[in-house]
Image (cartoon, rainbow, N blue to C red; front, top):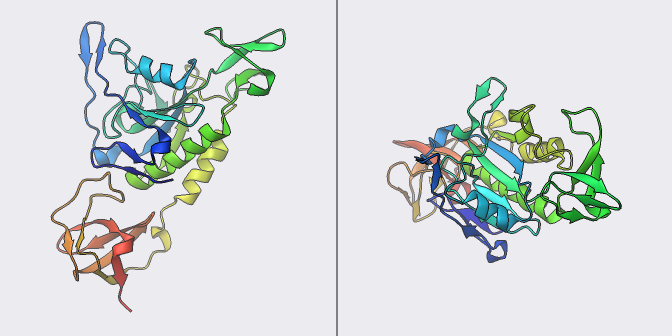
Length: 284
């Protein structure tokens, strides 16, 4: 994966991702819906959704329509193609009325990822039909009980490519924004939403992501180091998406390293911030 997040909070990198950026301007009930910038220190959650649409492209276009009040940061097609609709630092309208673990208003501090998936299906003969009348073969279907329901029904499966791309993207977002929570829409809107549903193994997905990206600072020992790059950017947080604090550190600058996270070091000089681990040499 050769992706990165630019300073304007857009995904870039490997052209095989086929990223398409679609600026969204929203108007609902005659008034414009603003997409204000979220405070960088507040972004700590990823919310996983399904589109309940016929394709990733059609869902991306629908979510980008001015008169549709909903929006999301990312849509991932079943082929793994990614559509970015909103920069990661801008509020997108994906969570709606939401509450989890004593917190509410998840649009204020979360990144919304929509996975191209039809959701629940109805069996008709030997085919399975979606709410928008598309039909699916048996190998595309899972029979399962949603955690908030008591009886089994049929669900559209996600593709391996799609979930792998989603996991890689979430890992990148965790590294760049210090994400601490990965939740399903059905976990923050219990009784109102059922996505991403039982076809998406949320507990396994979440555990794998958060365990491999767990901060290393709990057993971290501070040390002194020297900047080896000609100029080393120092940022508010661990990742290029975070804003710079002050001027770049020059080659030879002595720093005190007080923390580490996902390939980034928290350093203290005259100022305090985060730098790439690759450009600081530890004193022997």
